[in-house]
Length: 491
Image (tube, rainbow, N blue to C red; front, side, top):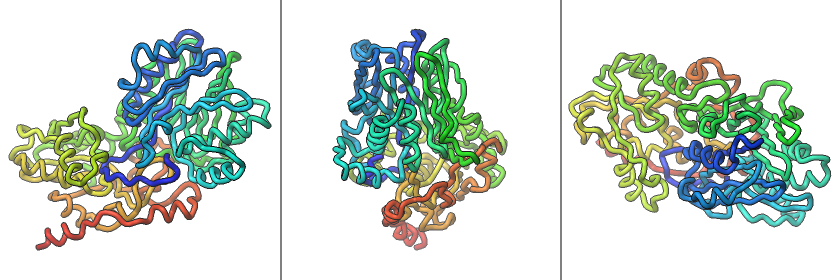
């Protein structure tokens, strides 16, 4: 995250910070090409910049730039990245942070040699650590938390007997979320914060080891899933094999995996901490059908993450599922448009109703979330213009009433529509005939009662860690004013 700013982009969609991928190869896998394939599989986690760093017997070369994976890397570029191990990254940034110098992996040279780091997450104490390092003479080249982590590891390495010991010492100083890959001249290290906010898993192909944010990326590299990295665990791979260090693992369970990985972030075919994303989303739809039944002719899902829940709603309710909205995957994201009018136009270009499905029908529309409320009313309006008789909106997550400080760009409280309006008022704002959210007390049921600990702070306000006062104040600003639309509707 850009630790100096909060997101000012008016996107109804939520975004996760990024995805990481790493390879330690015994020759069975080409690290650069495997990383390229892994990043393609993780592209949904970040579309603004990407990079790959490869280690060839202690010499680290890298390539990174702004843009999609397929745009940044060519055959020639990949062929030039030769080595035995790699770390790679795709990134989504906050406003103001979308610049080339913030692209990862970060490669830094220091007194002990060279390190490459790829990081997914957000530190809640990054500002304090950064100030302390700056007062000691550190000069930062980026505005991201990852550079703070890199400095800490480099500082600790000077006094430690190994890189993994330096990583462990640095972890003791970090608060917040981080799934981390660190590449030294001879080792590849994977680490996950003690709460396990962000996913990180390990795979294997013959004698090669692969690490990724999601299991779907292991599949793309041809590796077999082995297990998830435990919260607080450090895994080290070198020429002697693989070692697990659990000094930072909590004695009592403190696991707080972001529940929105299952609701929205993760790819449908991923399995995270033993729970299939597809099945959890379908179960959310089944719960919505039981909690908020309605007489209707068909169920549709807002692409992409609303589709799985729509299938579950259909199975539970017996109402047929049909494709009712077509998504243009080649349109740029709506939030980068400079004016609200242009953003509204982009929504129409990105999503389009399928007239033959919805005309004359009573429609149940499933979406994954309502954040600011700036998009759902346009989708409902589009369906009505396409001839839908009724539109019943069902949301496969609870209402957002609290900001996130762990790497999801949920905005300030003032911009969250559910902080200012009741469900009935939001229903009127959206233009839907009825509205139902997934109840917060059903989140565990959505995860098939298998979850060993999830973070639901954005729905409940119960944060797993202490949040610094400055961060709390930074998320209290005002936002979108919906009152005029409510008054107009009442008139």
